[in-house]
Length: 514
Image 1 (tube, rainbow, N blue to C red):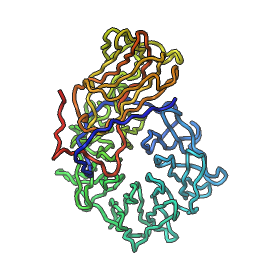
Image 2: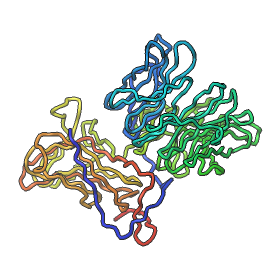
Image 3: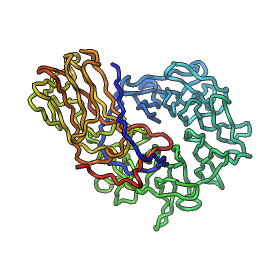
Image 4: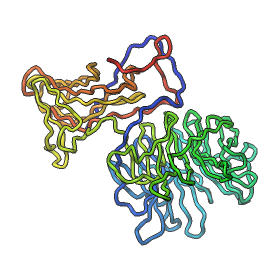
């Protein structure tokens, strides 16, 4: 199936590029795509294509682990081991948008690890210096990606390193600011596209978060309570860092809290989910370019019980993802990663943002959609090419249309759907509250071939609007024109490190357009 991509171009008077770290985002609901049957799968990271990596037991009777790649299209696939005769236990830790997996494998003969990079697109290993006692934990995007992890020197000290294609390993030495301490652990956990990486080290006997910036300087990060443990787990391209920091409570307890560092000296307590028990810890695992943070928090369910629930934090509020997931009634324990499309990796599957309800018409009827045809018909039928699938058939007499009232995202988004013209006549028009955004003409397509349409909406006038009518209409010069519509969704676009904002003589206040 080919993809037809349209962009909504808007004339502008003034174009001002601003760095945006945390725009106001609409609170959306999610649909869970579960991982399915995979024994003891431990997911680790997800890229902007929704591809997930992690590791799982090789069989239900073996305790050794093997790297796993998962996507909604392919399901789970086990990654190859570097050398089965030498290594066992492979841990896939991160994957970038090019499909390069950062991982490490453990020797049979000892408990030491070796860092490896694997390209899932070409099914090949990338050349890296074979370094004994090393691990990869994070990898960036870009044509020459950075990777970070840890390396144990001959003096049994642990230090950070990063790698990129042109120079292989670059070891971060004491002279560059990462203090080496024999027997103490320092580890890089995440790296952004500018080569800035974060992780933890040990200073004066306790673990402390740090950031190694693009100038080659290492900075320890401020803590909620001085002298308590902290760890930096992710950094986005704007330099925002998340992780956890222990704090001393009023009753002299030490509890961990999810935090964000907006600078090395400014740490923000992100709070926790509601609870009335003494179990009130939370930890942040990841942040995307829009400033959305995910992790886990203790919460209370029932008398005297405690649970760990996954959260998403945005607009200054922490939300329980179990409450926002529409097709799953259990509790989701942990959110591990979030990409720029707003997809969230959890311990049980991937949460996909839902801006359009019943976009797949799986219920066998229009559901949240209305038949707004003016003489034509809109009917949910069984897909002629797949009996397990349902779709909408639009037939003209006069225009045939379906409409759903939606809230639009507060950022650039794509209107996505599958379509197929059954006749040589007709046009499909996409409108938002009466404004014509996109048109597809039957004469420009292959009749009887299923296509995917992607309409890019970048005009701020359509961002963050409530109760907007999204309408897909089939019209034609003759009666009897027909087309199929399926898989309607709104997808968030991936932001650049610096996002361009349209301003017309000052700040624009986005309100409902009526």
